[in-house]
Image 1 (cartoon, rainbow, N blue to C red):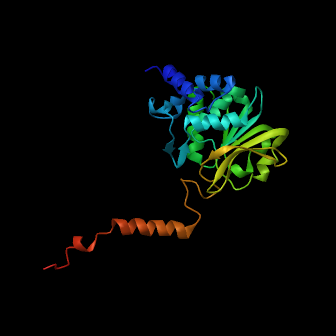
Image 2 (image 1 turned 180 degrees about the vertical axis):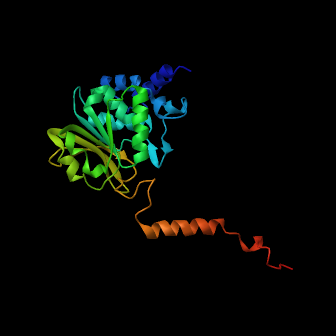
Length: 243
């Protein structure tokens, strides 16, 4: 089926009252333009409203992307930073909305940075700057930002990201631990909540999927458990005389 048709059906479902994830005409138009299949291997599955796991990260479902970007409320010409570029789809929707040169993105996992760059170029948004760095530090070289989107949960808004907001800027992020709220945070720390959500916690250097885990005890416990699971049980051993 024509990807444009699948894409239109996807956005129509996000606008329907049963989901109500996309309300604004500008966001609807942006999501109708971005070829989501350029960011995922399966063209048909790309337009299904479900998340995917890829290279140790979760590719957000379209409905989740809609919720995030409605809360972000980016406007024409806004300078935007995305913390957690992933495969680049959310970044591309923002690039379509505000202009590719106005969007910067960072990710802590180098393999994802390379993939996001390739995907964005394939989809026609190669002017977006994607860099590999610890997201908690933001991208101060291009600050201040009118909007910052953090696609990972934190107990409190990272101060260095708040410091990179313009005076009337907005940081949107999943706020909390086991129980989270989608929050829009102003530079002075004022929080506006937009319902519940469930995101993976923000990673710091050493916790990427493609690096050695910083917590050695937890890593070794997992390795020992995997070895134990693969070890043959007593009834499988040749040297035991069961008679």
